[in-house]
Length: 485
View 1 (tube, rainbow, N blue to C red):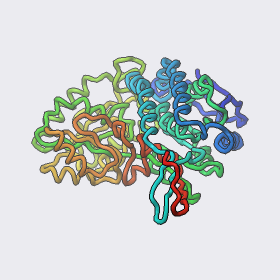
View 2 (tube, rainbow, N blue to C red; view 1 turned 135 degrees about the vertical axis):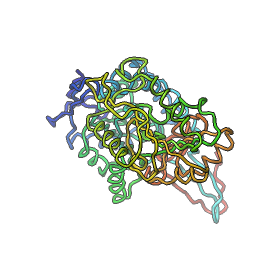
View 3 (cartoon, rainbow, N blue to C red; view 1 turned 30 degrees about the horizontal axis):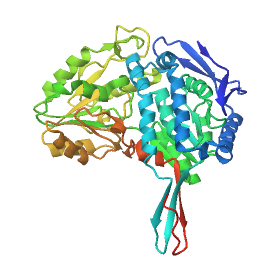
């Protein structure tokens, strides 16, 4: 049992005074495996006030970029020193497989180093020619960041907010998802080991009420959120009312477009990984598979055969590919979509049931639908489960139109006989990121974010880092030549 009575505020452990707790239930055993305190509004105030002081008076925003980068390297080292616990606790709290959590944990150092390299490309001071003289453009840390994060990749998504915010000089207060509040405690422990300055990082627990209070707090300068469209809409409304910058990374219903003639035996695992990895609980999942009508039956047979060979079961086992869904509620939602697909005329090629081999836990068989029309709910709404919808097309222009017939535009994939042709197709899909012939998802190290209802702004790369910076123009008198350095 992971049982804590304190939370991490301003660089130290603070016993909560709320008397309320979050219970964490294992998706595998359906038993309570953790208990953490819910923050009071006063504790959120203290976290924001500490971040405010760290920004307004502390050294962190004024340190050279290289020094902040070195401190974050120490933070990452301290996280990796807890490698086994990092993996085990994420399995415990949300049922992610050991395969998935091992890969995401191993990616953390490279994620930070890419970020540091990208930050080095952003000029802090730039001299330009203005209308009557020279202008200096400064890029300065924006202020205090509030971050609200989801449960589907608990620690990695928290780090995707914390690392860039701190790297660019902005203290941050994080409110993790109530379903997965355990693994962020390891980040707090690592922050102490790395000797991060007081106030630059706080982590407060709670549900919608605590998240809403944090997002609207007068001491916050910007907000970053990853989660559902409905929650993002509410957060965006709050930030609009406050004229507050916000980055929203929301839902997806991405398409994997299989071009006519491509040999999918080369890319089958890539398609499955990008579509139903983490039991489909990924916003970038390409769970609409568009395939030429002449290749549909062959691809469906390949998918069914390959999926049948992937182990479903205990996520602690190293060879398990499909673990449980995060919660009983999430499984009910996914089962509702499966019933909807059948009701609207789609056909199940495999899966669709609770596995008999798993009498306990929130497991669901990976499901492949055929005879899907893009107007069906299973093709239009985000399911967040291990469900693929195979949609046939007769011409490539039709396939691109189907891919774009969505309220979302977050991810995507194109599989083509020729990568250049795949690139041409990818450019015609209205989405924030797209991968060609097995390229990495989520932008592959480039900027990540969505179009349409998939969100606002970008994370990662230069564009994502710039969201933590404020731009200031200083106009100089005619004839004055400032130091270009």
